[in-house]
Image (cartoon, rainbow, N blue to C red; front, top):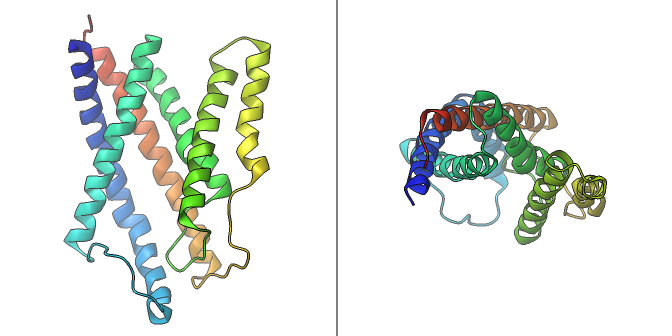
Length: 216
């Protein structure tokens, strides 16, 4: 129980710091693109949106809170994995951070890239189901490929990495976007870079803090 409390404390600190970094990057890089895209969406909107935070401090506050909580959850996953594998330090943390980036961002984004407001997309539940399936399949596939030496498990790992993309992500039958394609591509690029920095910093901080703490 004492070790678990230490893991939680480590994850909380690493998650808050990495979440803060992501929030700053989003505020100065991707938020202006989102606001620009909303200018294309609002005049033609024909339905009433669900509640969403107002622009300004409310929107920024919810973003920072969400990023901090997300960072904590992912940091706990990284810290627990490193604790289980008896790994410590920056380099090990960077490796786990890179794995998290591949599992939770890169693999799902190959089928469902980040989207700006005003972009048509498939039904929410089908996208969520495919995202979860892709993340789980990628995580298990990487484990079989990288953390085992059994040939059969490695072949199975490669198969699991490819499976979600062979099935294909859900997309609307007829799609059109209100935002310019160049704006969408710029958003995808910046989002990819920001998430890479978030995951690498999260992993490095988790590994460094784990090395500084004595476990039973």
